[in-house]
Image (cartoon, rainbow, N blue to C red; front, side, top):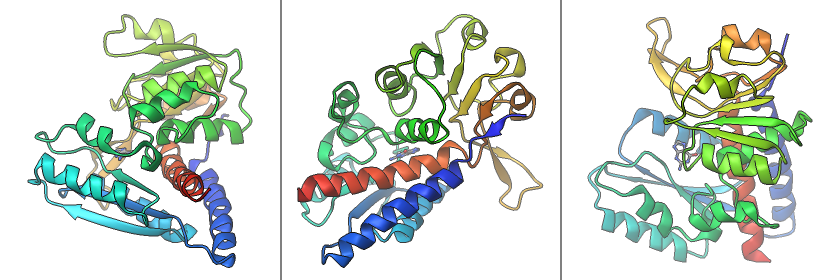
Length: 290
Ligand code: GUN
């Protein structure tokens, strides 16, 4: 049977480490790191994710500011909020929760955030810094996955890592990090890839970040592979109290018995993204005060 990569447990370990540092800072008379979050509109999934981020701030002793803005906000006005946060000396890092309404350009908004406050790691400068010796603030989801692999002592060097999905916030930066830091041989598959299975079956480490529930079936996975599922899609489930449940991109029940390690959904990559956000905010704080 596989080892379940317990993102909740590892994220809790990281929270304890961050909380310990915050306590030491406060004991030394310093202020706590301060994270701000902008959320636009009332998408319930976004509010749930942001709630998790706020709770994590409370757990580790960070200061936090939640800015709720209307779906109808203009791009110009949202940019003004970003400029204010960029200039605010009390704010160490901030994020704009995605998705944004269609009339607002994600590229314009994320590109406006100062790289040293970009704790999601979305800006071009932080993306590019993956390939430098001293990365600044790493993209949060890929950072969390690398940390999960590290803490379970999973060897990546020389392994064949297949990343399915080439998005700007997950697949693309992750493939670079697996190559640069993980020293893996990387194949990136995306929506134009022909014969996806021909690639996935050769993966020692298979990472899937597409958002298509059940895309990866057992016949697409090599015996003994490490499987990381980044997908979290809400699907209707009348038996659940909320009326939905989260489903990953991997057909977990059928795939898991073939693997050596696998992440569950929920409880795998999701909590690690929040842990990365905390680590990045602490790093942003430390870079600012040093
Ligand atoms: N929406 C889904 N995932 C994320 C994330 O990691 N950061 C932000 N800002 N929005 C998201």
